[in-house]
Image (cartoon, rainbow, N blue to C red; front, side, top):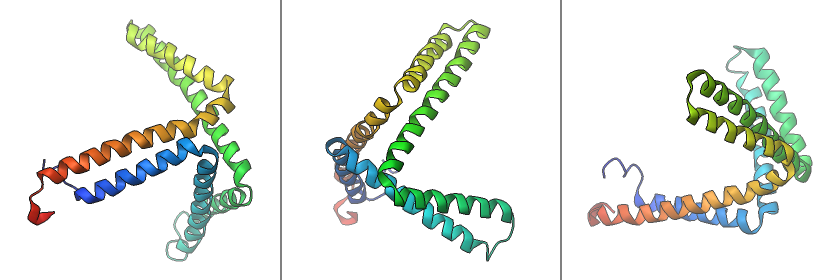
Length: 178
């Protein structure tokens, strides 16, 4: 039980409750919630780019890459902040298309491994990955629309698990150290 108690039980409880709130927001108001999160990502990229430029005053190594990355961060952040709705749609669709190509690539690799090693498990995994990738590429906007619900369900499940774990840890902690 000692390795579980890295954080105090009440901090795990707060974490779980916040996760539950965010999960419920994603499930019940997915459009607004995902737009707010993408806007926060835009602000993070913008501020991160500014800090990267500021960091150049202290460390001039790899200056070309740092300037390039800072400019990309600032521009991406500004575009997202200026057009949060369009950016949300674009980023979700881009993510789904990327995952679709990744699923097809992984599927092909598993099929090849299954063929070379005569492993039916790798072959089945390859077929499933290919089907998953093709479905994502065939219906990217439907898949992008489901992302907030998927995030919400995982956040709710993680929040419930954290709340349960917090109360389990609280029961094992002696009253003086709680």
